[in-house]
Image (tube, rainbow, N blue to C red):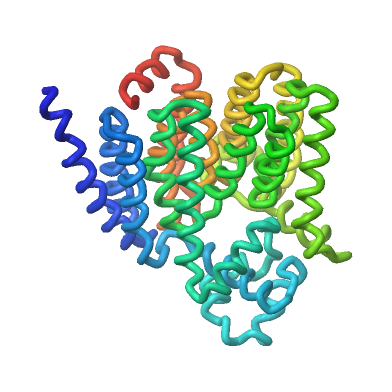
Length: 426
């Protein structure tokens, strides 16, 4: 048995490489093949977590998994078309926050493939990607090979995150992020920039733990300028730092925000950006958990979808804010900040109206620090959300929603099930 375990890595790594090779060529319509391949990769991932090799060996293995995906065009997401569109605008000196693609397509007819590729929903709304994201989009366009540039940036971000997670937690828990099929597929594979935001987030947390508060604030501000999610955790640090330290952090945070926001300033910026961001909270629904249950109940009482989502979006935002303030009061040390941040994001995702698979990347990273296994489990079940793209309208059957969310909820409420997960996953 010991001999078999010793050589398992020589079986699991090649099998995973083959799995990623075929996964890179699967379209959203091939949902059963997608779920089957992803499940096999997840099983291999769990097997690898139980094995031992050198730190450099793990780095090379994770890099190899990502390099398999580098040469392929993303088939599971069309978001990268908007990334390249925004990058093109910025490279031409045009503020991407001020114009709809619908308004500019006649002027930039040579970008028709980007316009049609991003889809009518994206083309009809202002961009919602923060400022550092926009700079990275432009960097890709200036390199003449945008997708390759984006992937190299994402790969570097994942590597930085892994190195920091090993310092904040342990190598084994760091590997839960570095080798995660969901992180690899939705990051380097599908070109979502959550891994870059996560790299800055964990860097900020690392510097905070090291009591380098200025560097921490700069890194945390950079993470917000990639995705707004870290704003949710910001209040939790307030009770941990003293007044002098807090002033340093506020200064570093604000100066970083100002540095990257100033080039995009315009009288219309706040209007267009807030309109775009607001839509995600009050107009869209995809793969919802708690909200889906409430919506189905609302239908029984004759409540329209648009009425429910608008009311729920506002109520949800206020509830998360109140919960963040409660957790702030309870977070009086660094370990509690991490635990409460994980719990806050988990509750947010369980209750949000829109949950795409790549939203879990941040949760997996925080789970690696706080050593909670529920994010690992959810990273498997959430792949079932791709079934929605085979439906008309694009909405999951309730039984698939149940299969995705119930195991996660049980892992949170049952101590014995959580202990079982920790033993089996790690």
